[in-house]
Length: 94
Image (tube, rainbow, N blue to C red; front, side, top):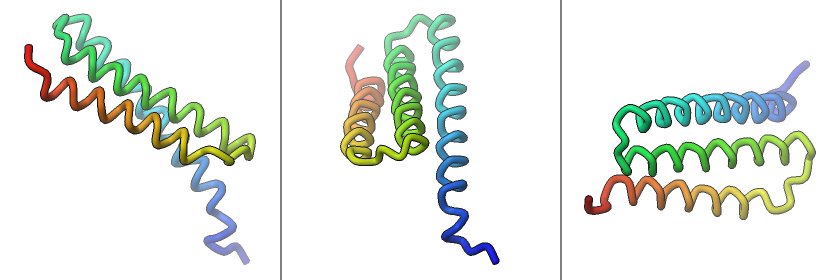
């Protein structure tokens, strides 16, 4: 009988794959928006999605390689960069 605990690794892998693909799609949309509007705020949003995409790639690698030693440190550092980029995009004066 399969338990929920047996499915956790597959659910983690699936969730990371979905987050990676979604962040890549949002990055592409943001870059296309920047190319059309040429506004600095959109460039900062693009940077945030790019950082998020790189973070998800790194976390996916660490999960698949089972090298989870510093995963929370990496995650916190990338999340901080994403939040800073969004903050600058939203609240920076023109």
